Amino acid sequence: MKIEDSPAPGFTTNGYRLSAIDCRLWPILFAILAVVFLTGCQDFGFPTPPTTGTPPARTAGRTTLVISEDRAILAVQEYLLNKAASARAKTYLTDLYASGAAWTGKSELLKDGTRIFNVTLTTSKSGTQVREHWRQALWTVFDDGKVLPSSTYDGNALRIEADIQALN
View: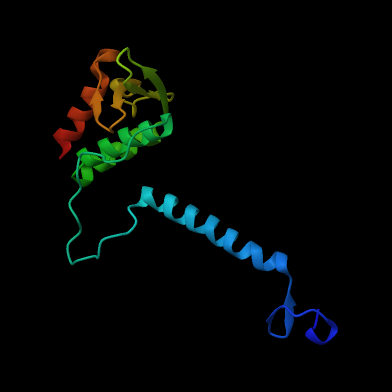
């Protein structure tokens, strides 16, 4: 609505009058976007440190609390990737993931109130390319992000980690 057509004074932008509803929605919209932006960037390390000539060294530990099965699976995958330092070890992980690996996480509450997650790797494909210890492996993830390989399934998680260490 043009200002000339409007008898009531109001806020104007480029000759158009903004209603009171439009003006009240901007602070709410801004607050919602700020909350989404700030909470969503925590997972990506916001604010990012200034980059230097050398890439930062990877750390084996996590600082994010593990509160869901998805985060536990990501913690195990990050743990394995941090162990793989050479290109051959990373190729090994790629072959493992490409072999039809399915990751599942199950939450378990201990008697002392601590929550742990059991992350199971199950490979569905069979053949000569798939190693026997890739069929099933289990890692335990604590709520502080610490990952431990389990001896369940004949210690296959330990065998996978030993393969990665041998390829480094």
